[in-house]
Image 1 (spheres, rainbow, N blue to C red):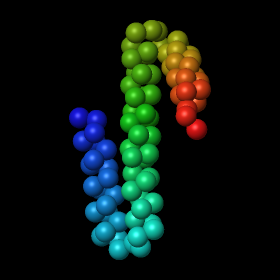
Image 2 (cartoon, rainbow, N blue to C red; image 1 turned 90 degrees about the horizontal axis):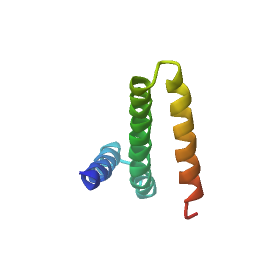
Image 3 (cartoon, rainbow, N blue to C red; image 1 turned 45 degrees about the vertical axis):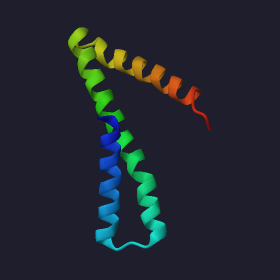
Length: 84
């Protein structure tokens, strides 16, 4: 399912830039940006649902702290394991 989501993002970017009639350089930029925007949206959704799960498992007071600590460790892992 995951590859189909990105294929849809590429298709949407391709058709959208075609409808807008953009030049080839900007068309390429749209194709490069599409999966990044999709990944950012998916990450935001996962953060939201992680926070909701933490709120459900723990009391209402601990949920923001738990979510913040969890995101901090994910951010550290992501930035620490970046190839660039």
